[in-house]
Image 1 (tube, rainbow, N blue to C red):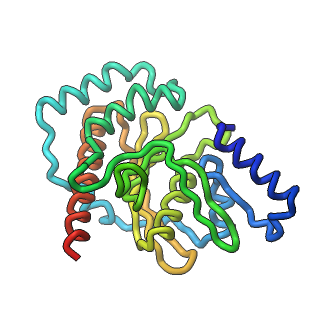
Image 2 (cartoon, helix red, strand yellow):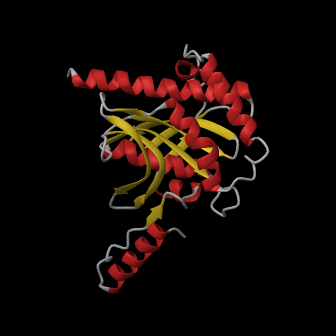
Length: 245
């Protein structure tokens, strides 16, 4: 249990002792939520649409020789360890260097990447809360509006399915920011999957999961890099549109 989760648990116990939790609203941490809890409170289903990722993945992002060399070196330096890395090793040695190369930060357009960012989504039936592994959001000093999430995990943990954890974060972001769709990704060792979540109605959602991208293979890693750069460029275009309204 992380320090934040211990604090949240202690605060919950104090509230209960003081009789403040009279409604007994169940609270779920992003890091531990499972499909069972999601489906208990939400109508959420996996959907299939053959072309849903076409606009995203069929991008024309070019990879120059410098980026290609960086990606090759990233694989060479980590391929013997990537499946055995713990969570922090995976982040420090592989994921963060890749994300830093994409450069999810724009002072001009007022957005950047945040690590370990706190989000709380409260309803009269449940509460989703916790810290996100990675989010690109509007704002330079604090998150104002999230645009894109990445959830990753250490394979040895008991709560080891990052997909429902990511979905809980995406649902929270959609509701807190009055959006109808949002994108994200989750990582299991070397494998990346990209996700699109769409809101269909009150507490009703559908989501799409991409094919596997194996980041230990240069072709797939190039695809991951292009997909991430496409997200950044799309955010920039979105900010530009919002600024002229």
